[in-house]
Image 1 (cartoon, rainbow, N blue to C red):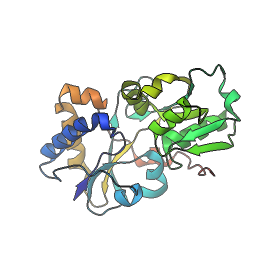
Image 2: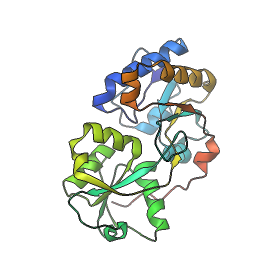
Image 3: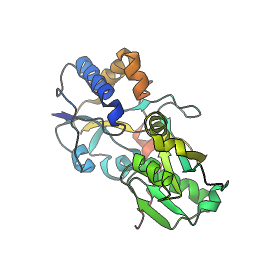
Amino acid sequence: MIASLPMYDWPEVQSHQDKYWQAIRQSLGFGPADLTRGFDDYTAHWLRPDLLLSQTCGLPYRSQLHGKVALIGTADFGLSDNPPAHYHSVLVVNAQDDRAQLSEFADDIFAFNDGGSQSGWAAAQAHLSQMGLCLSQFVETGGHRASIKAVATGRAGLAAIDAVTWELALRHEPAAHRLRVIDRTVPTPGLPYIAALGQDPAPLRHAISQAIENLEVPAREALLLRGLHLIPAAAYLALPVPQRPAV
């Protein structure tokens, strides 16, 4: 049996993530002693039959995992101008770049973390499409933090960073302070907690809710946690699945 919380597991907050997991485990009454870290194949990890708990992204949930995992619920991070347990992406550019309109970046390089990311790829493409913009140059960075650095160093002109990660970056990544937000996407359902198909989600949902409520304030604030909400699978499935970029 394994558990992981990989989506916002920055080194600077891992000790708080560990406390969060221990609180979940204590409320649940069982589970592995430690979180699993260091895996490369996220889809294979999420589909493991011994998965007690993990957190995925909305795009892989609707494109690969729906019907193959149990949906538990979605964390609420208290983001302003978002419904509970929803999030948006901020579109960021270099603070030294004096271009004022997103349309002026249409021919620039777009840095994205992964083609399977809702916040770093799908949400941005939907937003740009609605504006009639079509990007043609891309660089895949492998992570939001790397995308932030790519724009800060001039390797790319534009990136989409989910709002929770952006807040973590403002706290812990110096390169974020060399960027500015030029636009933001509409809110979409946040990153859902999942378990192996066959796991009863109700006890897990209760344990997560109790853990967030009982977590020490410094840990809860470090992780931005506010609560847990049940967003139906249909809300995730209603969003489009964009074509992956050719890089």
